[in-house]
Image 1 (spheres, one colour):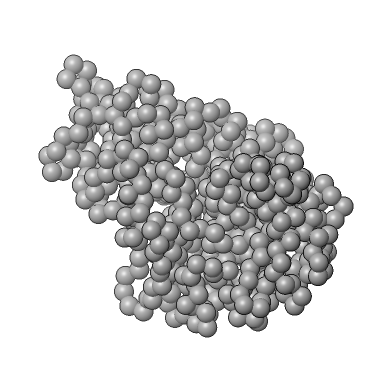
Image 2: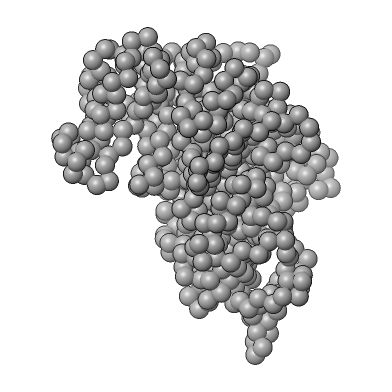
Length: 152
Length: 433
């Protein structure tokens, strides 16, 4: 299961991940146009949480048991059986925010302008996710998670 | 005679959850879903959007059109099972055919509570639970102007928004002193109430409808309602939305143990071997109450259905439990509510923050979150829900909980590492043998 892991020990909260994610998901893919011309502006799918010197990016874990998919009332949320990527069908999503309510990482962002749930899509259309490629400190990396099913 | 390994009665969240889990484990055993509705699975919460937008059925379908075929599921639509046939494992359909089954799941959901009010049979009176309800109202709406919605809870407010969007003047009559009183506290209700009134909806609280009356020249068409205080409200449409109760017909008179709903254990198994239940009909484990309750919400229905399905197919899984959990966005206000939001009794601590129309309240007991209400300020609510679900001791950071920037970074280092590193939740774990 692929996902993007953020390293708290080296993240410096420069937020270039947010900037590059926004540009990557904009219409123009151009920094100036994406930020200054497109309305509504695209939304980054990654968010840096910061408290004094502690910071890290939070993104979708593309969970093996995706509670967002199970909770979604429209069927918009789905997990691709081949790639494992959890994604939101933007046509079906009605912006009820049930997924926002259940994601334990707070990784799903409500795009209130468009009324749609937004989350990391692992940049499946790119070789390396935009945030990972542009992090100056290598604080973001793609990890392959072994599917562990702990027995209690 | 139909022969099936798995019989799933009900074609909504719970039934589909079970079918999908079964198919993960067993790609061969015959799966038969029986529904008394004539539709492929659709999202019941979306009937409001259906009524509001005059949209096509496709927009509220929960799965693709080829879902049943792709998963090799036999689906019998518009057919009702009258008898489950526990001892002989032989169910009886209303049309006379029998179904022999090995494992059965009762996922029939709930039915609307019918108030004791005269005049319910008049034309223009409807409940608002199924797609057929929405279609019935939709068929009348173009010739109607004023509606009374009986009940200011989740269903009532949902119906109210749909009707308002179609240009109908709505009056909500709520028995208790505030709207959405089962999922919101006083402040939350007030914030929603403000928005609804500004949208032109009339809200009358602390009153019930005593009688539905007809029109002067057409007594079988609804013409108004009379409240318990004698006040008359003219209207040409009435939506009854005072709640749902489990559909217990298949359990009544059998050895199935029932409380308010069909009682199930942590494997979603009923008191009868080979019979399971989930969704709005079931009384399953609630992790906030630490006891079984009927929790009629979509996520718990689907997840409970999955657990039932795994167990039916022989993979023993345990249900972590559900709780009251609702997220809705009506009239431009967003509400996320879960757990105990307005507890009675001792030992509860409330932490809250109100900024204009942005509100957060957490209810704690023994330094664990047991309830949450978020109005408009809903970002990252799932982090709090997760801390509640996992009964995490929040004493070292509880002041930050209701704060503006609460996020994973607000947690102490060790807890933060644990919660950031987890490969998602285990919503259901293999049971210890």
